[in-house]
Image (tube, rainbow, N blue to C red; front, top):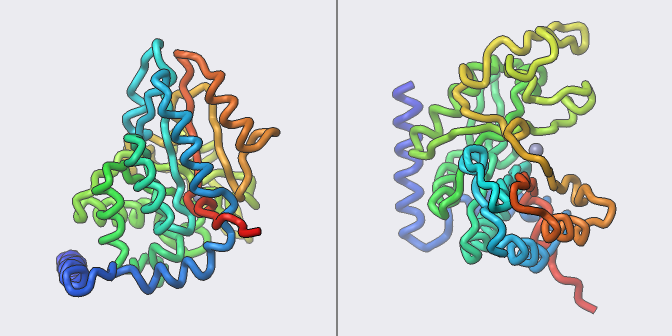
Length: 289
Ligand SMILES: [Zn+2]
Protein backbone atom coordinates (compact mmCIF):
# COMPACT_ATOMS: atom_id res chain seq x y z
CA UNK A 1 0.00 0.00 0.00
CA UNK A 2 2.72 2.47 0.99
CA UNK A 3 4.58 1.65 -2.22
CA UNK A 4 1.41 2.42 -4.18
CA UNK A 5 0.97 5.74 -2.41
CA UNK A 6 4.64 6.59 -2.95
CA UNK A 7 4.37 5.80 -6.68
CA UNK A 8 1.26 7.97 -6.98
CA UNK A 9 3.07 10.77 -5.17
CA UNK A 10 6.11 10.52 -7.43
CA UNK A 11 3.85 10.44 -10.51
CA UNK A 12 1.85 13.49 -9.41
CA UNK A 13 5.01 15.41 -8.51
CA UNK A 14 6.50 14.71 -11.91
CA UNK A 15 3.29 15.97 -13.62
CA UNK A 16 3.57 19.25 -11.80
CA UNK A 17 7.14 19.54 -13.00
CA UNK A 18 6.04 18.61 -16.55
CA UNK A 19 3.37 21.28 -16.50
CA UNK A 20 5.90 23.86 -15.41
CA UNK A 21 8.34 22.90 -18.15
CA UNK A 22 6.29 23.57 -21.27
CA UNK A 23 2.61 23.98 -20.43
CA UNK A 24 1.72 20.68 -22.08
CA UNK A 25 -0.61 18.75 -19.80
CA UNK A 26 0.69 15.33 -18.69
CA UNK A 27 -2.31 13.67 -20.33
CA UNK A 28 -1.60 15.21 -23.79
CA UNK A 29 -0.66 11.94 -25.47
CA UNK A 30 -3.70 10.07 -24.11
CA UNK A 31 -5.92 13.01 -25.09
CA UNK A 32 -4.65 12.88 -28.66
CA UNK A 33 -5.42 9.15 -28.86
CA UNK A 34 -8.90 9.43 -27.35
CA UNK A 35 -9.79 12.48 -29.46
CA UNK A 36 -8.72 10.58 -32.59
CA UNK A 37 -10.94 7.65 -31.64
CA UNK A 38 -13.97 9.57 -30.40
CA UNK A 39 -14.23 13.22 -31.42
CA UNK A 40 -16.00 12.34 -34.66
CA UNK A 41 -18.78 10.60 -32.68
CA UNK A 42 -19.96 13.87 -31.10
CA UNK A 43 -23.55 14.63 -31.94
CA UNK A 44 -24.31 17.90 -30.15
CA UNK A 45 -22.53 21.24 -30.47
CA UNK A 46 -21.20 23.37 -27.63
CA UNK A 47 -23.59 26.06 -28.87
CA UNK A 48 -26.44 23.73 -28.01
CA UNK A 49 -24.96 23.18 -24.57
CA UNK A 50 -24.76 26.95 -24.10
CA UNK A 51 -28.45 27.07 -25.01
CA UNK A 52 -29.26 24.49 -22.34
CA UNK A 53 -27.22 26.43 -19.76
CA UNK A 54 -28.94 29.67 -20.79
CA UNK A 55 -32.36 28.10 -20.15
CA UNK A 56 -31.11 26.81 -16.79
CA UNK A 57 -29.87 30.30 -15.88
CA UNK A 58 -33.48 31.44 -15.43
CA UNK A 59 -34.05 32.47 -11.83
CA UNK A 60 -36.67 29.77 -11.26
CA UNK A 61 -33.93 27.11 -11.32
CA UNK A 62 -31.50 26.10 -8.60
CA UNK A 63 -28.88 23.98 -10.36
CA UNK A 64 -26.56 21.86 -8.21
CA UNK A 65 -24.20 18.89 -8.26
CA UNK A 66 -26.07 15.70 -7.35
CA UNK A 67 -24.83 15.42 -3.76
CA UNK A 68 -26.11 18.94 -3.01
CA UNK A 69 -29.30 18.59 -5.05
CA UNK A 70 -30.40 15.42 -3.22
CA UNK A 71 -30.52 17.35 0.05
CA UNK A 72 -32.01 20.56 -1.30
CA UNK A 73 -35.79 20.86 -1.12
CA UNK A 74 -37.34 24.18 -2.13
CA UNK A 75 -41.00 24.43 -3.15
CA UNK A 76 -40.45 27.93 -4.54
CA UNK A 77 -37.88 26.79 -7.15
CA UNK A 78 -37.18 24.07 -9.70
CA UNK A 79 -34.26 22.15 -8.19
CA UNK A 80 -32.01 20.59 -10.84
CA UNK A 81 -29.21 18.05 -10.35
CA UNK A 82 -26.65 18.12 -13.17
CA UNK A 83 -25.07 14.74 -13.83
CA UNK A 84 -22.40 13.85 -16.37
CA UNK A 85 -21.26 10.27 -16.89
CA UNK A 86 -17.76 10.25 -18.41
CA UNK A 87 -17.90 7.04 -20.42
CA UNK A 88 -15.02 7.72 -22.82
CA UNK A 89 -13.97 11.36 -22.98
CA UNK A 90 -12.66 13.17 -19.88
CA UNK A 91 -11.12 15.87 -22.07
CA UNK A 92 -14.59 16.93 -23.23
CA UNK A 93 -15.55 16.94 -19.54
CA UNK A 94 -12.93 19.64 -18.94
CA UNK A 95 -14.42 21.72 -21.78
CA UNK A 96 -17.94 21.17 -20.44
CA UNK A 97 -16.95 22.23 -16.91
CA UNK A 98 -15.31 25.38 -18.32
CA UNK A 99 -18.58 26.32 -20.03
CA UNK A 100 -20.60 25.64 -16.91
CA UNK A 101 -18.22 27.81 -14.90
CA UNK A 102 -18.95 30.74 -17.23
CA UNK A 103 -22.66 30.30 -16.44
CA UNK A 104 -22.02 29.85 -12.71
CA UNK A 105 -23.38 26.30 -12.88
CA UNK A 106 -21.83 23.32 -11.07
CA UNK A 107 -22.37 19.65 -11.86
CA UNK A 108 -21.23 16.15 -10.89
CA UNK A 109 -18.84 14.25 -13.15
CA UNK A 110 -18.76 10.46 -12.71
CA UNK A 111 -15.46 8.79 -13.63
CA UNK A 112 -15.58 5.26 -15.09
CA UNK A 113 -12.91 2.82 -13.79
CA UNK A 114 -13.35 0.44 -16.75
CA UNK A 115 -12.84 3.19 -19.35
CA UNK A 116 -9.82 3.35 -21.64
CA UNK A 117 -8.81 6.72 -20.20
CA UNK A 118 -8.91 5.40 -16.65
CA UNK A 119 -6.46 2.52 -16.98
CA UNK A 120 -6.18 -1.19 -17.63
CA UNK A 121 -7.36 -4.11 -15.53
CA UNK A 122 -4.56 -6.63 -14.98
CA UNK A 123 -4.91 -9.65 -12.69
CA UNK A 124 -8.16 -8.34 -11.17
CA UNK A 125 -6.49 -5.07 -10.26
CA UNK A 126 -6.72 -1.69 -11.96
CA UNK A 127 -3.49 -0.22 -13.28
CA UNK A 128 -4.48 3.43 -13.53
CA UNK A 129 -3.14 5.72 -16.21
CA UNK A 130 -0.95 7.76 -13.84
CA UNK A 131 -1.29 11.02 -15.77
CA UNK A 132 -5.06 11.05 -15.20
CA UNK A 133 -4.75 11.93 -11.51
CA UNK A 134 -3.75 15.44 -12.57
CA UNK A 135 -6.81 15.65 -14.85
CA UNK A 136 -9.25 14.62 -12.09
CA UNK A 137 -7.69 17.33 -9.91
CA UNK A 138 -7.95 19.88 -12.72
CA UNK A 139 -11.64 19.01 -13.15
CA UNK A 140 -12.26 19.12 -9.40
CA UNK A 141 -10.59 22.53 -9.14
CA UNK A 142 -13.24 23.93 -11.49
CA UNK A 143 -15.70 23.54 -8.62
CA UNK A 144 -17.42 20.33 -9.67
CA UNK A 145 -18.28 17.23 -7.66
CA UNK A 146 -16.52 14.04 -8.73
CA UNK A 147 -18.25 10.67 -8.36
CA UNK A 148 -17.63 7.09 -9.42
CA UNK A 149 -19.41 5.72 -12.50
CA UNK A 150 -20.09 2.26 -11.13
CA UNK A 151 -19.24 -0.73 -13.33
CA UNK A 152 -18.69 -3.19 -10.48
CA UNK A 153 -20.80 -6.08 -11.81
CA UNK A 154 -18.92 -5.94 -15.12
CA UNK A 155 -15.62 -5.89 -13.25
CA UNK A 156 -16.65 -8.88 -11.17
CA UNK A 157 -17.78 -10.98 -14.15
CA UNK A 158 -15.41 -9.90 -16.93
CA UNK A 159 -12.26 -9.26 -14.92
CA UNK A 160 -12.74 -11.47 -11.87
CA UNK A 161 -12.42 -8.49 -9.51
CA UNK A 162 -13.76 -8.57 -5.97
CA UNK A 163 -16.20 -5.64 -6.11
CA UNK A 164 -15.78 -4.50 -2.51
CA UNK A 165 -11.97 -4.53 -2.81
CA UNK A 166 -11.66 -2.73 -6.16
CA UNK A 167 -14.19 -0.14 -5.04
CA UNK A 168 -12.24 0.43 -1.80
CA UNK A 169 -9.10 0.98 -3.86
CA UNK A 170 -10.91 3.57 -6.01
CA UNK A 171 -12.09 5.48 -2.96
CA UNK A 172 -8.58 5.32 -1.43
CA UNK A 173 -7.12 6.67 -4.65
CA UNK A 174 -9.45 9.69 -4.75
CA UNK A 175 -8.96 10.29 -1.04
CA UNK A 176 -5.23 10.38 -1.66
CA UNK A 177 -5.75 12.91 -4.45
CA UNK A 178 -7.72 15.03 -1.99
CA UNK A 179 -10.98 14.67 -3.93
CA UNK A 180 -13.99 13.81 -1.74
CA UNK A 181 -16.32 11.16 -3.18
CA UNK A 182 -19.91 11.12 -1.96
CA UNK A 183 -21.78 9.19 -4.58
CA UNK A 184 -21.91 6.81 -7.45
CA UNK A 185 -23.94 6.49 -10.65
CA UNK A 186 -24.53 3.17 -12.36
CA UNK A 187 -22.95 2.62 -15.80
CA UNK A 188 -24.92 0.73 -18.42
CA UNK A 189 -22.23 -1.62 -19.73
CA UNK A 190 -22.85 -3.93 -22.67
CA UNK A 191 -22.66 -6.88 -20.28
CA UNK A 192 -25.18 -5.59 -17.72
CA UNK A 193 -27.52 -4.53 -20.52
CA UNK A 194 -27.29 -8.01 -22.08
CA UNK A 195 -28.16 -9.54 -18.68
CA UNK A 196 -31.08 -7.17 -18.21
CA UNK A 197 -29.67 -5.83 -14.95
CA UNK A 198 -28.05 -2.63 -13.69
CA UNK A 199 -24.70 -2.16 -11.97
CA UNK A 200 -26.41 -0.60 -8.94
CA UNK A 201 -27.76 -4.09 -8.11
CA UNK A 202 -24.34 -4.86 -6.62
CA UNK A 203 -25.60 -2.91 -3.58
CA UNK A 204 -27.98 -4.68 -1.17
CA UNK A 205 -30.17 -1.53 -1.23
CA UNK A 206 -31.16 -2.20 -4.86
CA UNK A 207 -30.36 -5.88 -5.56
CA UNK A 208 -33.34 -7.92 -6.72
CA UNK A 209 -31.69 -11.25 -5.85
CA UNK A 210 -28.64 -12.60 -4.00
CA UNK A 211 -26.98 -14.20 -6.97
CA UNK A 212 -26.42 -13.76 -10.64
CA UNK A 213 -25.60 -16.49 -13.08
CA UNK A 214 -23.55 -15.98 -16.22
CA UNK A 215 -21.91 -18.59 -18.48
CA UNK A 216 -22.36 -21.32 -15.88
CA UNK A 217 -20.87 -19.27 -13.03
CA UNK A 218 -22.78 -17.99 -10.03
CA UNK A 219 -21.87 -14.54 -8.73
CA UNK A 220 -22.97 -13.02 -5.41
CA UNK A 221 -24.60 -9.63 -5.59
CA UNK A 222 -26.34 -7.50 -2.99
CA UNK A 223 -23.95 -8.61 -0.24
CA UNK A 224 -23.13 -5.13 1.03
CA UNK A 225 -25.00 -1.86 1.15
CA UNK A 226 -24.26 1.38 -0.61
CA UNK A 227 -23.10 2.70 2.75
CA UNK A 228 -20.80 -0.26 3.35
CA UNK A 229 -19.27 0.41 -0.07
CA UNK A 230 -18.54 3.95 1.14
CA UNK A 231 -21.23 5.96 -0.68
CA UNK A 232 -23.89 8.36 0.54
CA UNK A 233 -26.08 8.10 -2.55
CA UNK A 234 -26.71 6.40 -5.89
CA UNK A 235 -27.63 8.91 -8.60
CA UNK A 236 -30.61 6.92 -9.98
CA UNK A 237 -32.02 6.61 -6.47
CA UNK A 238 -32.34 10.18 -5.29
CA UNK A 239 -35.60 12.13 -5.19
CA UNK A 240 -36.67 13.65 -8.53
CA UNK A 241 -39.91 13.74 -10.48
CA UNK A 242 -38.37 14.41 -13.91
CA UNK A 243 -35.41 12.73 -15.50
CA UNK A 244 -34.00 14.25 -18.70
CA UNK A 245 -31.19 12.37 -20.39
CA UNK A 246 -29.30 11.73 -23.55
CA UNK A 247 -27.63 8.44 -24.35
CA UNK A 248 -26.02 7.14 -27.50
CA UNK A 249 -26.09 10.68 -28.90
CA UNK A 250 -29.89 11.16 -28.66
CA UNK A 251 -32.09 12.91 -26.12
CA UNK A 252 -34.83 10.76 -24.65
CA UNK A 253 -37.67 13.00 -25.79
CA UNK A 254 -39.82 12.55 -28.91
CA UNK A 255 -38.94 16.12 -29.93
CA UNK A 256 -35.24 15.69 -29.19
CA UNK A 257 -33.26 18.60 -27.79
CA UNK A 258 -36.10 21.09 -28.41
CA UNK A 259 -38.41 18.86 -26.40
CA UNK A 260 -35.93 18.88 -23.49
CA UNK A 261 -35.75 22.68 -23.54
CA UNK A 262 -39.55 22.81 -23.63
CA UNK A 263 -39.80 20.51 -20.60
CA UNK A 264 -37.39 22.76 -18.71
CA UNK A 265 -39.19 25.96 -19.69
CA UNK A 266 -42.56 24.53 -18.64
CA UNK A 267 -41.29 23.09 -15.33
CA UNK A 268 -42.87 24.46 -12.18
CA UNK A 269 -41.56 25.39 -8.74
CA UNK A 270 -41.49 22.25 -6.64
CA UNK A 271 -40.30 20.14 -9.58
CA UNK A 272 -37.10 18.20 -9.03
CA UNK A 273 -35.17 17.36 -12.19
CA UNK A 274 -32.13 15.19 -12.79
CA UNK A 275 -30.37 15.95 -16.07
CA UNK A 276 -27.92 13.35 -17.37
CA UNK A 277 -25.55 14.12 -20.22
CA UNK A 278 -22.41 12.39 -21.45
CA UNK A 279 -19.54 14.78 -22.33
CA UNK A 280 -18.55 12.23 -25.03
CA UNK A 281 -21.41 13.32 -27.30
CA UNK A 282 -20.75 17.08 -27.12
CA UNK A 283 -18.44 19.43 -28.99
CA UNK A 284 -19.48 18.44 -32.49
CA UNK A 285 -17.70 20.64 -35.00
CA UNK A 286 -20.04 23.01 -36.86
CA UNK A 287 -20.66 21.81 -40.40
CA UNK A 288 -19.10 23.99 -43.07
CA UNK A 289 -21.18 24.51 -46.19
ZN1 LIG B 1 -21.99 5.15 -18.57
